[in-house]
Amino acid sequence: MGVITDEARSWATAPFPAFEMVISRTDIQRFARAIGETDPVYFDIVAAREAGYPDLLAPLYFPYIIRSHASHLVSANQLEPDGSASVDVPPLPTDRAMAGETVIDFGAAIHAGDVITMEKRITDLYEKEGRSGTLVFVTIEFLFTNNRGHQVFRESFTRIYR
Amino acid sequence: MSASLTPGDAIPLITRTPTSIDLFQFSAAAWLLHKIHYDLPFTTESDGHPGLLIHGPLQGTYLMQAVQWWLGSEIRPTKIAYRHSAPAYLGDTLECGGSVTEVRDNSFDVDLWVRKLDGTVTTSGTATFNRSD
Image 1 (cartoon, rainbow over the protein chains, first blue to last red):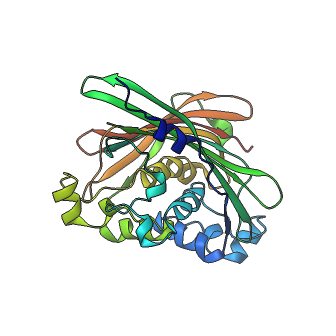
Image 2 (cartoon, rainbow over the protein chains, first blue to last red):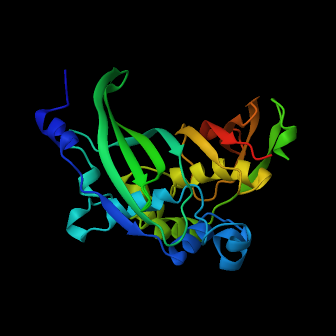
């Protein structure tokens, strides 16, 4: 018994527009504080330059905030009642989701002043029969490139709906 | 420092007890709007959780910090893979650690985990980091 309808398949193949973010020092400082970093290369431009960086260094998982902005920087009527972005919710009979595996490939470091472009696509959509019913697996790939054409980050994230 | 890495080496534990301010800062920095991280009545009444959830990606950062707080922020990974196996709630104290599993000339592999004080693993994964000698 399949729950992945043609509607869900066309949701999965619809293109997402690329999202561009100009990375400010404040963006980096704010995220670094939020995760409890203390190394001054994330906060202090003098320390960052002395360490050999062109500007403030972004913490490793900084691209997460780019993809979160890409989803949530929308008008209120494009959000679900739980605050998630409607565009991210596949048309399935359930919206009960669990996080599956996250796989990240790291490329060039991100610094303040970089312009990062994020491309997003659904790379996998399939179902499996579990003990408690049908599970639907959705894998989303996020590809991040800087304004010098270097890949800085690639994240593949699987959500499981049941 | 990384020159002396040996398989089996333990990554020094980092212990974190995120407060409501930490959860708010993470949501705010990411412009993340999911209510399960700040709206307690919604989270308990509509979503059936006993408390506000500690973000999965915040736990992902703990995995990366366990290695970088040990060896320095110039030590960068090439790859990391992780998954969540149990929820973590506001008020939980989380320990993050792991061990070195393989050492090569230019890189090394680690196992990483986040667990509650009762031993429940909430997030675990593997990573490959570049050595800088």
